[in-house]
Image 1 (cartoon, rainbow, N blue to C red):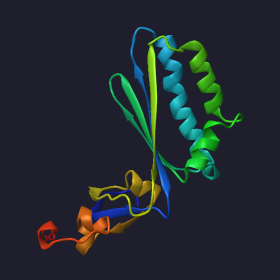
Image 2 (image 1 turned 180 degrees about the vertical axis):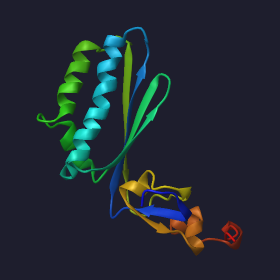
Image 3 (image 1 turned 90 degrees about the vertical axis):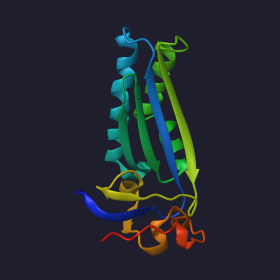
Image 4 (image 1 turned 45 degrees about the vertical axis):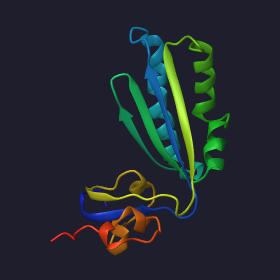
Length: 169
C-alpha cells in the first residue's frame, strides 16, 4: 500500500495510542557545533526505534523547516514512550544528558515536545488521493463510505443530510 490511494480513506488503531510531537529550533545558526549534534541525533533515535517494534513506536514522520525540525511519532502507549525515554541502554538518555550539559539554558538551541494520549473514538481523519500517511501508516486504512465520509460520522456522531458531501462520480 505504498502508492496513491484514489479513494476516501480513514485510519484506525486498535485501542488507545499516543501521538508524540517533538522538535528543535535553531536559535543561533552560527553556533553549528551546538545545534548540529541535536539535529543528527533525532533521526538516529527514530532509526533505533524503527529497528525494534517491541519498543512501541508505530510510525514517525520528519518535518523540516528553515530553523525548525519536528517529528510526529505514533506510539502504542505512553508506557512504551516513557520506557524508551528513560532506557539507559538507548540513545535518548545520553542525548538528553549531553544536551543539558552542552546547551543547557544558553538559548542557542530550543527543544520541545508534546504528548497526546488518544482514546478509541476520540479522533478522526480522512485521506483523499494520498499514499498511506500519518495515522494511516501507524494503523490500518479502510475506505470511508456513507456516514464515514464526514468528520461527525467518523467520530460516531449523528450526521445530518447537510453533513454529507456528494459522492464522487
